[in-house]
Length: 456
Image (tube, rainbow, N blue to C red; front, side, top):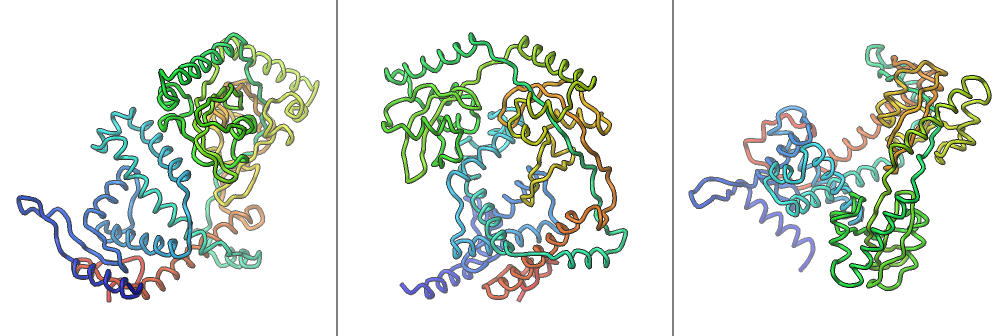
């Protein structure tokens, strides 16, 4: 069938459905088509679903939700349709990780998986299935938006001109930012505890080899990797460069899906691994992670050692910078004299942190320090989920203030870039709306929409 004829046919079917309702056995209206955008129909149930999701996530809509929600759905459909045309891809691995992270956050909020099922009035499998579709669409929208604005550049002259023309009361407020140096010590794990964990993994391997348990079942019950445990330990197709080197070396050496790897130690703990499939330069495996428990005595000894190091720094025996470069266990900051780095939403690497962007344990300590001050030792969880002990030095602090072109050029540049991106996306949508078949029910025709062109 001719593709153009098919699109016209689908549009005519959607048009014929506009305003048509679905009823239950008692004749009560349960759903109806309220908008048609291109060859896509927007149902009243779609609007209600987005309203509920917004309430769950604490989001608010501009203006009347009865108008702004269907418009937002229509906008999303325009982006998704263009993303399909332009082959903007979202991998199954990205979707799985995103959905699991969302579920994990929701479970932490409500208290348990059972409460989450009760909250949604669905089983976990149903929740996951629903979330996968919405997450895929959301990622496709973001991918399309990024593609539309990826080549935008702003010159220093444009930033200065924008700043000069901006009223003083409209200048952005720059929150307090700090620069922090850190020196860490990892508490020593007793050999007896390491032996205990390895023995557990050997027992798991034995049960799998004897057929008394499956790898997936043991992973769900015992793996301490929350991102993969509920999927039976499954880690989707991943490149070697994205894995811990020790883990990758063992995983990529596997050839028999029926066999279990030797025990491998990574930055995260101890693993056993089972091959599922190899595809080019990527591998799909399942694993079980077990983490040795650090004793209170080991933590106390690390804190005491750090207190001794702090006293030596205060007495001038050596500087914090020297200690961070030589003594610290933190490999990410050791080569920078302990200076912590932050990656902003714009992808820029900077040593300047808002307090909210620091690890919570570090932020609480830094908030009590004067510039140049060194904290008492404290315990924290690092970005690999491990317990470490640390001392920090407040290298610099810039108090919150109205932006100035001399002190906050990058902030002002980001403001200009954001406005430019918003304008380009707005113009693209208006143009797209004008070239797309749109039909909406009469009750929505008086809405005050964000984008012009819906009503014709």
